[in-house]
Figure (spheres, rainbow, N blue to C red):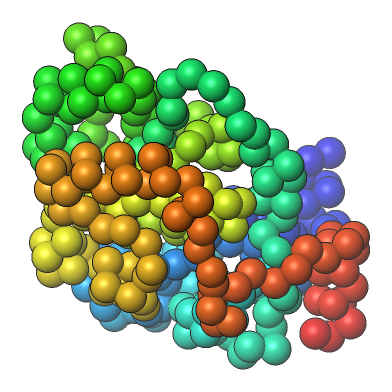
Length: 292
Protein backbone atom coordinates (compact mmCIF):
# COMPACT_ATOMS: atom_id res chain seq x y z
CA UNK A 1 0.00 0.00 0.00
CA UNK A 2 2.95 2.32 0.62
CA UNK A 3 4.11 1.91 -2.97
CA UNK A 4 0.53 2.44 -4.18
CA UNK A 5 0.19 5.75 -2.34
CA UNK A 6 3.62 6.91 -3.50
CA UNK A 7 2.66 6.30 -7.12
CA UNK A 8 -0.67 8.11 -6.71
CA UNK A 9 0.62 11.12 -4.75
CA UNK A 10 0.28 14.46 -6.51
CA UNK A 11 2.40 16.37 -3.99
CA UNK A 12 5.42 15.48 -1.88
CA UNK A 13 6.46 17.60 1.10
CA UNK A 14 9.95 17.10 2.52
CA UNK A 15 12.42 18.83 4.82
CA UNK A 16 15.59 18.89 2.75
CA UNK A 17 15.99 16.71 -0.33
CA UNK A 18 13.81 14.53 -2.56
CA UNK A 19 15.82 11.63 -1.12
CA UNK A 20 13.75 12.18 2.06
CA UNK A 21 10.84 10.68 0.14
CA UNK A 22 10.65 7.77 -2.31
CA UNK A 23 12.11 9.80 -5.16
CA UNK A 24 11.99 6.95 -7.68
CA UNK A 25 8.21 6.64 -7.27
CA UNK A 26 7.49 10.37 -7.32
CA UNK A 27 7.62 11.06 -11.06
CA UNK A 28 5.06 13.66 -12.16
CA UNK A 29 4.36 14.89 -8.62
CA UNK A 30 4.98 18.40 -7.31
CA UNK A 31 7.74 18.97 -4.73
CA UNK A 32 7.34 21.28 -1.72
CA UNK A 33 10.59 21.80 0.19
CA UNK A 34 10.38 23.11 3.77
CA UNK A 35 14.17 23.11 4.18
CA UNK A 36 15.54 23.08 7.72
CA UNK A 37 17.33 26.30 8.52
CA UNK A 38 18.54 29.74 7.51
CA UNK A 39 21.86 29.39 5.66
CA UNK A 40 25.01 31.24 6.61
CA UNK A 41 27.43 28.99 4.73
CA UNK A 42 26.73 28.45 1.05
CA UNK A 43 24.57 25.47 0.13
CA UNK A 44 23.44 23.45 -2.89
CA UNK A 45 24.16 25.13 -6.25
CA UNK A 46 26.16 27.90 -4.58
CA UNK A 47 28.85 25.61 -3.09
CA UNK A 48 32.12 26.28 -4.91
CA UNK A 49 34.68 24.52 -2.69
CA UNK A 50 35.13 21.05 -1.21
CA UNK A 51 33.53 17.75 -2.10
CA UNK A 52 29.99 19.16 -2.10
CA UNK A 53 30.88 21.33 -5.08
CA UNK A 54 31.29 18.26 -7.30
CA UNK A 55 27.65 18.15 -8.36
CA UNK A 56 27.91 21.79 -9.45
CA UNK A 57 31.01 21.07 -11.53
CA UNK A 58 29.53 17.93 -13.11
CA UNK A 59 25.77 18.55 -13.27
CA UNK A 60 25.19 16.21 -16.22
CA UNK A 61 26.81 13.28 -14.42
CA UNK A 62 24.72 13.87 -11.29
CA UNK A 63 21.51 14.35 -13.27
CA UNK A 64 22.01 10.83 -14.68
CA UNK A 65 23.41 8.99 -11.64
CA UNK A 66 21.89 10.90 -8.69
CA UNK A 67 18.99 12.96 -10.03
CA UNK A 68 17.49 13.43 -6.54
CA UNK A 69 20.45 15.68 -5.71
CA UNK A 70 19.75 18.11 -8.54
CA UNK A 71 15.92 18.03 -8.65
CA UNK A 72 14.38 21.46 -8.11
CA UNK A 73 11.45 22.06 -5.78
CA UNK A 74 8.26 23.47 -7.27
CA UNK A 75 7.73 25.46 -4.10
CA UNK A 76 10.16 26.35 -1.30
CA UNK A 77 9.25 27.68 2.14
CA UNK A 78 11.24 30.79 3.14
CA UNK A 79 11.27 32.52 6.52
CA UNK A 80 12.76 35.93 5.61
CA UNK A 81 13.86 38.18 2.77
CA UNK A 82 17.41 37.00 3.41
CA UNK A 83 16.40 33.35 2.97
CA UNK A 84 14.59 34.20 -0.24
CA UNK A 85 17.79 35.76 -1.65
CA UNK A 86 19.94 32.75 -0.72
CA UNK A 87 17.53 30.02 -1.76
CA UNK A 88 16.77 31.48 -5.18
CA UNK A 89 20.35 30.90 -6.27
CA UNK A 90 21.00 27.81 -4.14
CA UNK A 91 18.06 25.89 -5.58
CA UNK A 92 18.00 27.49 -9.02
CA UNK A 93 14.43 28.75 -8.69
CA UNK A 94 12.62 32.02 -9.26
CA UNK A 95 11.62 34.01 -6.20
CA UNK A 96 8.00 33.45 -7.29
CA UNK A 97 8.50 29.76 -6.43
CA UNK A 98 8.86 30.62 -2.73
CA UNK A 99 6.25 30.76 0.02
CA UNK A 100 6.67 33.23 2.89
CA UNK A 101 5.96 31.97 6.41
CA UNK A 102 7.45 31.73 9.89
CA UNK A 103 9.24 28.36 10.19
CA UNK A 104 6.61 25.80 11.24
CA UNK A 105 9.24 23.89 13.24
CA UNK A 106 9.49 26.90 15.57
CA UNK A 107 5.89 28.08 15.86
CA UNK A 108 5.20 26.23 19.11
CA UNK A 109 8.62 26.61 20.76
CA UNK A 110 8.45 30.17 22.04
CA UNK A 111 5.46 29.35 24.27
CA UNK A 112 7.61 26.78 26.07
CA UNK A 113 10.24 29.33 27.12
CA UNK A 114 10.15 29.69 30.85
CA UNK A 115 12.06 31.24 33.75
CA UNK A 116 13.63 28.76 36.14
CA UNK A 117 15.81 28.70 39.21
CA UNK A 118 18.94 26.71 39.74
CA UNK A 119 21.78 26.08 37.33
CA UNK A 120 21.91 28.04 34.10
CA UNK A 121 21.72 25.69 31.11
CA UNK A 122 23.97 26.42 28.13
CA UNK A 123 23.52 24.51 24.88
CA UNK A 124 26.58 24.19 22.64
CA UNK A 125 25.58 23.18 19.10
CA UNK A 126 28.36 23.71 16.53
CA UNK A 127 27.79 23.15 12.86
CA UNK A 128 29.55 20.26 11.16
CA UNK A 129 32.59 20.77 8.97
CA UNK A 130 32.84 19.24 5.51
CA UNK A 131 36.28 17.89 6.39
CA UNK A 132 35.26 16.83 9.95
CA UNK A 133 38.33 18.68 11.23
CA UNK A 134 36.81 20.34 14.27
CA UNK A 135 37.11 18.79 17.73
CA UNK A 136 35.74 20.69 20.70
CA UNK A 137 38.41 19.31 23.06
CA UNK A 138 41.18 20.75 20.86
CA UNK A 139 40.09 24.28 21.72
CA UNK A 140 39.29 24.00 25.42
CA UNK A 141 41.08 23.06 28.60
CA UNK A 142 38.27 20.81 29.80
CA UNK A 143 39.35 20.77 33.45
CA UNK A 144 39.44 24.56 33.49
CA UNK A 145 36.06 24.74 31.73
CA UNK A 146 34.46 22.34 34.19
CA UNK A 147 35.79 24.37 37.13
CA UNK A 148 34.50 27.59 35.55
CA UNK A 149 31.06 26.04 35.04
CA UNK A 150 30.93 24.67 38.59
CA UNK A 151 31.98 28.01 40.09
CA UNK A 152 29.20 29.85 38.26
CA UNK A 153 26.54 27.14 38.63
CA UNK A 154 26.29 26.47 34.89
CA UNK A 155 25.54 23.23 33.05
CA UNK A 156 27.12 22.93 29.58
CA UNK A 157 25.18 20.68 27.19
CA UNK A 158 27.12 19.66 24.08
CA UNK A 159 25.18 18.43 21.06
CA UNK A 160 27.03 17.75 17.83
CA UNK A 161 25.39 17.86 14.43
CA UNK A 162 24.05 14.42 13.36
CA UNK A 163 26.47 14.47 10.40
CA UNK A 164 29.52 15.09 12.61
CA UNK A 165 31.75 11.99 12.88
CA UNK A 166 33.56 13.07 16.05
CA UNK A 167 32.59 11.36 19.28
CA UNK A 168 33.44 12.15 22.89
CA UNK A 169 32.37 11.59 26.48
CA UNK A 170 32.86 13.72 29.58
CA UNK A 171 32.45 11.18 32.34
CA UNK A 172 35.04 12.93 34.53
CA UNK A 173 33.54 16.41 34.17
CA UNK A 174 30.47 16.99 36.31
CA UNK A 175 29.20 20.14 34.58
CA UNK A 176 29.76 19.11 30.95
CA UNK A 177 27.07 16.85 29.49
CA UNK A 178 27.23 15.09 26.13
CA UNK A 179 23.88 14.92 24.33
CA UNK A 180 23.37 12.31 21.61
CA UNK A 181 23.66 13.89 18.14
CA UNK A 182 20.44 12.11 17.24
CA UNK A 183 18.33 13.75 19.94
CA UNK A 184 16.00 16.43 18.62
CA UNK A 185 17.61 19.81 19.23
CA UNK A 186 14.20 21.48 19.20
CA UNK A 187 13.34 19.65 22.42
CA UNK A 188 16.38 21.28 24.03
CA UNK A 189 16.38 24.78 22.57
CA UNK A 190 13.43 26.31 24.47
CA UNK A 191 14.73 24.91 27.79
CA UNK A 192 18.15 26.58 27.81
CA UNK A 193 19.32 30.01 28.92
CA UNK A 194 21.80 30.53 26.09
CA UNK A 195 22.92 28.94 22.83
CA UNK A 196 26.59 28.72 21.88
CA UNK A 197 27.23 27.96 18.21
CA UNK A 198 29.38 29.13 15.30
CA UNK A 199 28.41 29.09 11.59
CA UNK A 200 25.12 27.29 12.13
CA UNK A 201 21.57 28.22 11.21
CA UNK A 202 20.80 27.58 14.88
CA UNK A 203 21.73 31.25 15.37
CA UNK A 204 18.43 32.21 13.78
CA UNK A 205 16.46 29.37 15.34
CA UNK A 206 17.45 30.63 18.79
CA UNK A 207 17.01 34.34 18.15
CA UNK A 208 13.57 33.72 16.59
CA UNK A 209 12.36 32.34 19.94
CA UNK A 210 14.30 34.86 22.10
CA UNK A 211 17.16 32.59 23.24
CA UNK A 212 20.41 34.63 23.55
CA UNK A 213 23.32 33.55 21.33
CA UNK A 214 27.10 33.54 21.76
CA UNK A 215 29.39 32.55 18.89
CA UNK A 216 32.52 30.47 19.51
CA UNK A 217 34.64 30.38 16.33
CA UNK A 218 38.22 29.26 17.12
CA UNK A 219 38.72 27.81 13.61
CA UNK A 220 37.33 30.81 11.74
CA UNK A 221 40.15 31.20 9.20
CA UNK A 222 40.48 27.45 8.59
CA UNK A 223 36.73 27.10 8.14
CA UNK A 224 36.59 29.77 5.44
CA UNK A 225 39.60 28.28 3.67
CA UNK A 226 38.77 24.56 3.76
CA UNK A 227 35.02 24.30 4.16
CA UNK A 228 32.44 26.75 2.86
CA UNK A 229 32.17 30.33 1.78
CA UNK A 230 29.55 32.47 3.51
CA UNK A 231 26.46 34.17 2.20
CA UNK A 232 26.73 36.31 5.30
CA UNK A 233 29.64 36.18 7.73
CA UNK A 234 28.15 35.87 11.25
CA UNK A 235 31.45 36.70 12.97
CA UNK A 236 31.75 40.04 11.20
CA UNK A 237 28.27 41.21 10.28
CA UNK A 238 25.81 39.80 12.80
CA UNK A 239 25.18 41.77 15.98
CA UNK A 240 25.89 38.93 18.40
CA UNK A 241 28.95 38.46 20.59
CA UNK A 242 31.80 36.40 19.10
CA UNK A 243 34.65 34.62 20.91
CA UNK A 244 37.64 32.76 19.49
CA UNK A 245 39.51 31.68 22.62
CA UNK A 246 38.46 30.03 25.87
CA UNK A 247 39.25 33.22 27.80
CA UNK A 248 37.04 35.31 25.52
CA UNK A 249 34.35 32.65 25.66
CA UNK A 250 34.20 32.64 29.47
CA UNK A 251 34.15 36.43 29.65
CA UNK A 252 31.33 36.85 27.12
CA UNK A 253 29.35 33.97 28.57
CA UNK A 254 29.36 35.54 32.03
CA UNK A 255 28.39 38.91 30.61
CA UNK A 256 25.42 37.53 28.65
CA UNK A 257 24.05 35.41 31.47
CA UNK A 258 24.51 38.10 34.12
CA UNK A 259 22.90 40.83 32.02
CA UNK A 260 19.61 39.39 30.76
CA UNK A 261 18.30 42.81 29.78
CA UNK A 262 21.22 43.22 27.41
CA UNK A 263 20.40 40.10 25.43
CA UNK A 264 17.74 41.63 23.24
CA UNK A 265 18.33 41.41 19.50
CA UNK A 266 16.60 43.45 16.83
CA UNK A 267 16.43 42.01 13.33
CA UNK A 268 16.77 44.29 10.36
CA UNK A 269 14.02 44.02 7.76
CA UNK A 270 16.21 41.70 5.71
CA UNK A 271 16.49 39.12 8.52
CA UNK A 272 13.20 39.60 10.33
CA UNK A 273 11.05 36.46 10.09
CA UNK A 274 7.74 36.48 8.24
CA UNK A 275 4.62 36.03 10.39
CA UNK A 276 3.06 32.57 10.87
CA UNK A 277 0.52 31.42 8.29
CA UNK A 278 -2.70 29.80 9.43
CA UNK A 279 -3.52 26.48 7.76
CA UNK A 280 -0.02 26.42 6.30
CA UNK A 281 -0.29 22.96 4.74
CA UNK A 282 -3.47 23.82 2.84
CA UNK A 283 -1.94 27.10 1.68
CA UNK A 284 1.22 25.40 0.38
CA UNK A 285 -0.65 22.72 -1.54
CA UNK A 286 -3.10 25.22 -2.98
CA UNK A 287 -0.32 27.48 -4.25
CA UNK A 288 1.68 24.69 -5.86
CA UNK A 289 -1.39 23.27 -7.61
CA UNK A 290 -2.71 26.65 -8.70
CA UNK A 291 0.40 27.00 -10.84
CA UNK A 292 2.29 29.17 -8.28
